[in-house]
Image 1 (cartoon, rainbow, N blue to C red):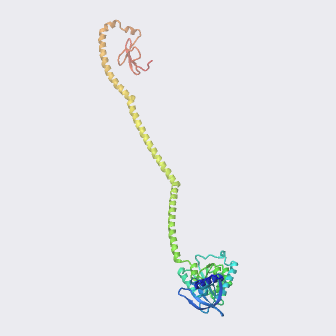
Image 2 (image 1 turned 180 degrees about the vertical axis):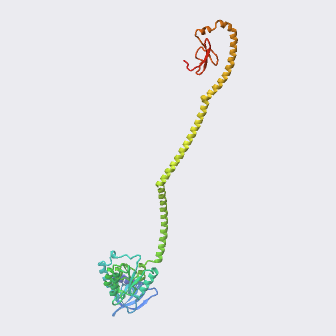
Image 3 (image 1 turned 90 degrees about the vertical axis):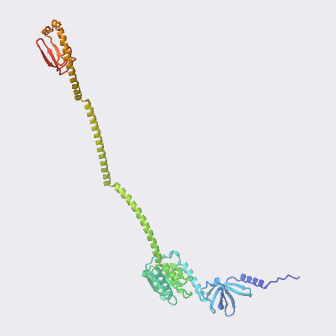
Length: 445
């Protein structure tokens, strides 16, 4: 029986093989020597990795190549991590590299990781052990090489940001034999001196073997035991050392370490000026409020002072005195007016006036009476003459001789027959048989 044949194109075949290679091989580590190295304009790296018996083509794409710490070159023995793949246009399998490190650096890196795990387990990286950096250090200590670029960068930054803060340099080797011993000694000496408020442990960048003194356990223990805040500024931003993890603060570069420990005087002056203006405004508002409160308190004090109260009492007394004087004056005027009215009324009703009026009336009456009496006398004389003869027969002289008398009113001459016409003090005339006499009325009964 004839079976149906499956025919693949070359592209399909290479694609199938590429998938099988990708599925059949996990991520691998491969060690070998670089040869035929090419850096393409795109940034991709192409080379062969070989040993004594074979070679394999390798590719490292730009997104992975930019993070390399080493410079790949022909003859460099490296250790790479990646996956097996197939370059389909040529039908050649190749190794796609994700990470590359120098064979020597790889051993150091493993040693680094082992020490890091050990010290982390011992608590040397614990956050609670970290000391805060002083915001305004009085003196800054720098532990580094006195001839390297790091010290120049640090001093330039400190001079620019805070030139008034003194800097004390503890010179040490930062790589090679004896470096770790000098670093440990310098850290301990700076901590014992107590002359600096903060320490910078720094050096410039370089390969891992150059930075290795800062990965030594003795250096890590010295940094951990330091009671002075210490900042690590070793290498470049991509470089990490054990000292970075143990230090109180890690800076990506020596210059950044100098930035962290030094206050920016220009920014600080600007901030101080802003605070000064705020303080001035706050003090002005506070003084205004206090001034207003003081004025209120002074006013209350003035209002409550005994002298003021006494003055108020005196003023009140003066006011009452003036009111009393005014009232008394008004009352006196009223009394005077009333007295004047009473005097007028009294004068109008005075007995003396009435007496004068009566006297005047009496004088008029007297005149009238005198005239009338005269007229009556004349009439009486005529009647007397007419009746003389008649009276002679009936003459009272005989009666008078018997002891009777006739009383006449002295002024009117009227014969008094009763006491009605009489008034005290008036004069009456009494006729007797042989004559007459006058008397003054002193009592009427």
